Image 1 (spheres, rainbow, N blue to C red):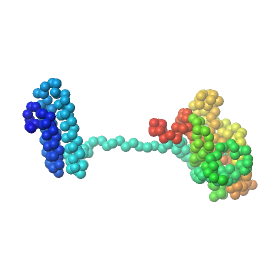
Image 2: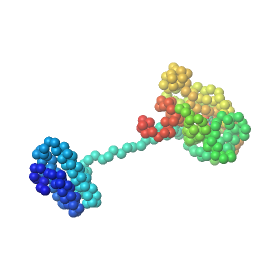
Image 3: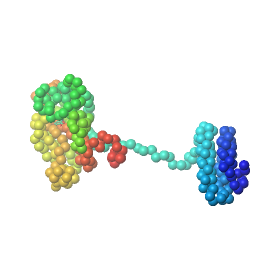
Image 4: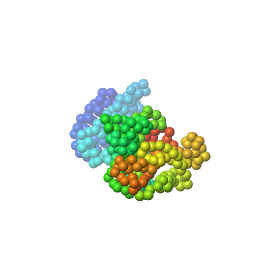
Length: 343
Ligand code: PHE
């Protein structure tokens, strides 16, 4: 065969393929690789000439020939790229590395929205002089309930559906047990927040999930009053939501605080006028709180005659949903990047 003749037969194409692959075996350095490239794939190379010769082929045969020629070109190009010498010398072979090309974009991760909100809450309390403490997620019945003034058969235990690990061992249902652990280690004054995961055996829906996150707060010293609780939570709400926001305090019940309250903030979307997020009430419930019960101090070895204190607990998912307009709690746990990318 000669590639320079006008017409190349199918047999010629096959011969060219064999010659090219055989010659590739002896490509062993930059010079022989370049020689091969010019001979077969260059602007005046064999492959180009085959395509040029197509003009002289009868129209009814041209299509089938074109397909064969295309296949040949692909085979030679691929074999050239894959040749053993090219593999070894990536970076030095001609045209294999262009240092002026832009690099591949490197996708950057970001903090999960729940962690962003947790950090915001944490940083506000740190700036007010609070420390941060953590406790275990697998907790004993004593820390999760009894030390917090839930009597063994107290009906208040039914308030929370609990995952039980074994006799007297549970997945903590709130972060309040960390209050006891902190006070056991440290006599007042105590100023501490305790963020973490909690678990409840609830039916999964758009509004509730079997695990979620809370931030617990505890302030214990001589002469701590309910006014300190109000002032601290108002300062927090004004830093976190809006500097002019108001809070509303309603009586409630928790076994470990007396008195117990629930705290609402003015709806930051409608500024109290009433909208769908606050269900037309103008207020959003964000946390439970109260003055630490003397029995809790006694469980933790703190003198209830000498010290008083307040505690509070807020759910991070709920606050994140309100702040970011998220209407399904399950989104936080599905790790769908289309959701996470938005934060
Ligand atoms: N532990 C309570 C809950 O999970 C919240 C709370 C914490 C209430 C501290 C009062 C004081 O609902």
